[in-house]
Length: 192
Length: 84
Image (tube, rainbow over all chains, first blue to last red):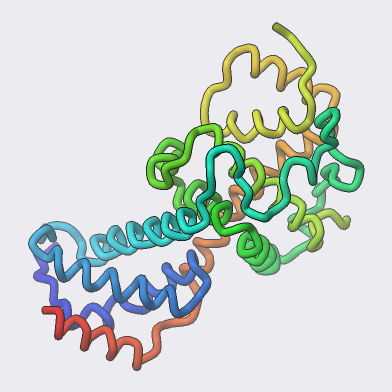
């Protein structure tokens, strides 16, 4: 591979589409995605000195964009961050899924079989439903879910990024999964 | 100590188990719960599927989606030129 010297003026044309698609796959709002790409270019320009010629310019820009996306989720989670005792994000709590007295599934919430889930829905349809369900989560849960399961940060990293205790982190992940499961089931996965 | 745990606890342990090793006691309690609870067994499979789908669905969107408008690219070029 021949060493490359980055030419910032060419970045939008050479890498803009790819970076934008990536950003849009994470944030789903076109304006925010565009901002993330713009910020990526500006940060890259600032950090031109840190670019090593043997690395790929494209990979380098993606590393910066990924960092921007994590920052985006951090802001989203922190903006809705609440006290340690009450993760009162306005969304459903454990009591909406389990009988408070004994902790067992309440009748209507008990998981039904998804045995033929894959066959029942087109892949594309499944992806669309999941995306919509993710967007319906309270902002903090949406951010934590995305950081863990899409960006694949570790629980420890997420707690650090978001200033969460481990106990609160697990409450958030658990609630997010409970709601996504229910949302998916409501939108077709349970019918077979 | 071996004890019966409820579904709320079992599903939380399932989430934790995907990420970290559970203490022996927790592991045994979860195993025991899953022996008799069909609902949490379903949850166990479904929660793994949800994680998988979240990843693959974002990856699919990153491969095929709308592109930047020429106007947006032009705006970015201008910002880069002013900043540089």
